Length: 511
Image (cartoon, rainbow, N blue to C red):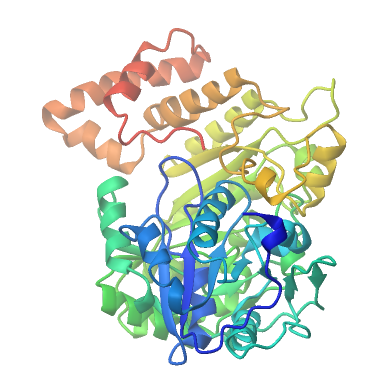
């Protein structure tokens, strides 16, 4: 892609197609979550343009599908978060350039919104849709399809030979003004089938987005910058109506709410649960909660949450050490985590508590929370409620956050281009200044194997009591795991290594 041939004026009059590409978000084996971000920006264009949503993970022959529509394309849109999704987006952009350099390439999503100027400087990008994309992208398409310049389109950045132009930001729109995501433009059934085959899911599950933003101030989260700590949720009646529609359309067993903070408004949650019950929306559902919020819900609402089908809440606990919780501005305490676990136990709701290890601290100083400290706290959660699942992620600073700035100060190298960001993956980065390789293995070994067998969940308990001959190996593993946990002796973990080998297709390692 030679920079001296870059176009600045795109006249796409007479073109009727809008091609939207969703690259694979992460290297390796991960659950497929629908690319709802692309569907939402496509919604205002439906009926006016020929829309093609192409998902690298789901669409067969996705490269050919993108390229075969270029002749009549207004543009190709690419969505991305930081890391591997950028790498895959750049790869597709290069193919588009090689086949038809006249087609403008528009990027959107978290990363381009945080770095619009730097993204436009890449030869893989002509235009960036910054922040909320439904209105901005529609206006970009209208300008391109009528041969008009992008000057004046708020929430938009674009490349020129004299430098990147970044237009005024677009004010946030209440999510209730955003059109429903057109699920029919995505290959929903194939995504479900792939998850059932590749991830051993036993139920038909897809995502639904019911709110935007989060009032929290967590120092590792980019939502606070993108949405300015502003939270808006779809009206409860609309949530019930749209969820019921996708459940009936796609014969769903479960809906995963992809909100950053589904439980931000107790009155709304109560109304949604009542609506599910009254409308006979007989499903299981999963959603995320802040640890300082969920356990403060009224008992009446907690009963409704359980009765309406809530299978599990995902609690972003992050740490149990007060200095770390202060550092990351979590606004919650270890006691909040324990109380949330007790609520899950008392109301029969599953819980997944996520933690992060390796938060930044000055070189040469000890961590404020060791790996063993974190594992010891997780054991307390398991003792309260064995059905609590725990996941531990290794901290990688996300750009645009306070902890990213602190990490750079402490020595994390800062990428200087879109191409360099492509190798920077907050979800799967294998190196950390603050977590040693042996700590990663300890987390995988103890949290991923020994704790689940030492404190068996309800499903494993049933196997241990009524599993026939099958219960014998589980009883052996349970006894071994409990002995190791009580003694904190994890050397020579023969049983763990054997289990990993036998269960390699389903074993969930540290992310």
